[in-house]
Length: 461
Image (cartoon, rainbow, N blue to C red):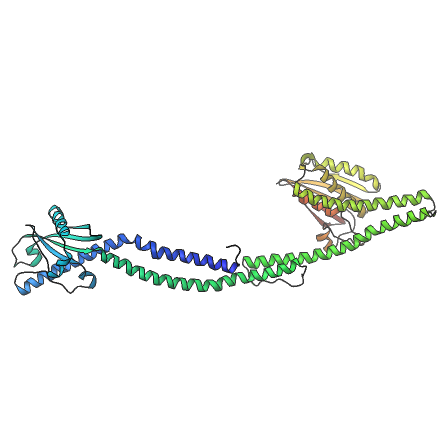
């Protein structure tokens, strides 16, 4: 079924549910009501028997003659009930219209039941010629049965009804349920078609728009005028569309700028090497010219290394990384000692508690180095590193008194394609963000009074 359209799947599900419920109503319910029908049959027999008693007494009082079983003008159900009278000597009396319904088996069975009966009235049943007979035997006297003009004698009034009555009830109910089922199916299937279309059409439209996104056609806005799950799906796809547009613009800008960043050292290296090969020394002598080539080579190698390391991090995020316990505060102090020689004029302030964390030590070293490298490039005179305990972990603050970040950079400084104020593109902070994401740690930047701070939240989950 999964290979069919969503609207057809919804309609099929609704149709199957309605068919299942209808099947229960049509086939199972009548059988579960058989006990009810049996009770109803006995009730009908008893009512007909009581009415027959009253009718017989009335007839005898009016005619003042010998009694006989007479057909009484009862309702249709009561007229189905047949009666005969058993005497204490074993004889019986019935109306001629009932004789065809009597059989030797029925007479003999009712005699045995009547003579063994202890209660005045009792219900019985028997199988006869592939059908079931339900009957009630009521003990009385002739005087009670036909009035005071008749000599008192014990008699048994037998009233019976065959199973065809119950079958008629079942058939009647079945016909009504079939009719009701048809109405239910019509009232459920037809609206189900429109309902399935109503549900599937927005998804079909979303499918078409997502196909356009896959073809890099991102200009059409995705708007869903609804607040249900489909509307939320549309909102998520719209966010994805905007993010793809932003990423595409950032990537294009990155490629343009990184090509320039890579092209510049390559051109310098190439031009200097050609000049040296021609016997010309751009810096005045061979050693100074070669030093420029080495410097540009290091610059080029660093940029290429950052790009390769980002790709390596994406690969490592799928394979996992090597975590171990180590003192993060000692790692920071050791890195500060090495970097402090780059600019002896910087004042370093370190206030760190002991922080024993479970992480990849080498990757966390790169995190600290890149953050401090960024701070050294923008600092005026002072850098502060502090830490504090927070629930389930630590928060480390890296502050420098450099220029504040603009509002846009606060939110995009850790992105892979972020461009700085001077147009330079750096990958250091994007590497920091990627490593911390792999560890389920977080980082954010904030403009502080007289400087900028970077906060790392190390929370063990």
